[in-house]
Length: 131
Image (cartoon, rainbow, N blue to C red; front, side):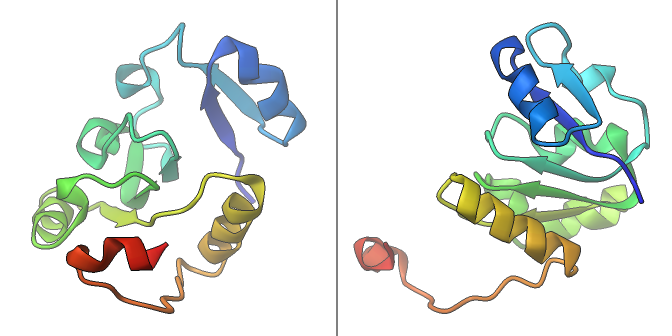
């Protein structure tokens, strides 16, 4: 099995350790877009929207996956396909309400190979109905 590295601010470091992180990286002291070990991560899961596959690709193994709960334009086809072909890395996006229950559910999906159930699809004009 692998290990879990958490990136957070100083004030959240003890919580990350309590939640089971094997290594905690303080983002206020290190620029993780440059300071992580190269090609060492299978999955990078960004819940803040501060990072992107393009910024973090150097730290991902070939075939690695970047997951974001706050996607940007490069996370959607055709951009995601182009980035995937160019980098050999993948990008996945999902929208979640950031709370423990949802994040645990997303973790279960990741363990199961990123199988994400979609129960409804809405046009952008019907965004209020999607909630």
